[in-house]
Image 1 (tube, helix red, strand yellow):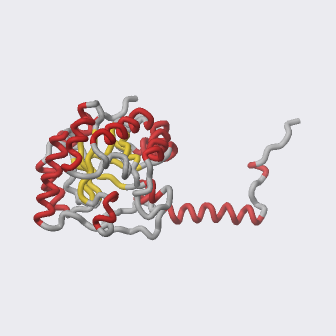
Image 2 (image 1 turned 60 degrees about the vertical axis):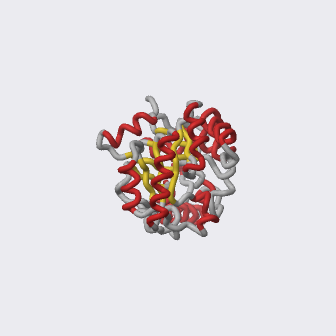
Image 3 (image 1 turned 180 degrees about the vertical axis):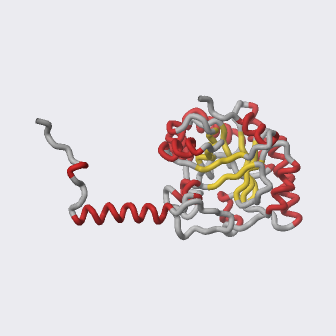
Length: 269
């Protein structure tokens, strides 16, 4: 079974198909989301929040992303794997960007990398692409800029900001990005960007007009009962399922009703 390529992802919107991408950080969930039929898996720096317990993504290191990429790569065979370039792994310029991206492919086992930011990274992206490293862009609410934005706020709400975002999107396409994530922007702006590009857009909090959608796996499963942003639809309530299951285990252990003979080993005679 061959992994879905960047060429196949780019072709999907032309064939009338929407791209389905989720974040994933380990082999077990990678196996499950592959069985569910997703097109792409993003090993995102969101792991800093949902796995490590940080308030934002900034503490995540390149080595940590590589570790999780390897785990995900071992757990699935078909989805396209995208490795996130964390904060500090590419901001110093094109040479650092290429070196970090190469490590994600070589050591992490992904097929492409994702980075946040606009035209300021065009030169480095172009060099990556020429070096054989596919790049996915990320515009709008870019979490690595949370302090600059003053929080997780919807971006491109003014005409000037929308124009700048469109210009950044075109610059990233010109630099060679095969797709763009559009996060936390008004739906009409996302539709405008999508229409202006030849490469697919993948939205999160950007409306239905994008060529595909991505959600954090832990969010769509409802693992955090207190996290309820407007863009999120929870497809299950794993918070309650996990609490109930572990609670039932604890009750049976304390009552001495687990394990039973069915769960115990005895010498054969």
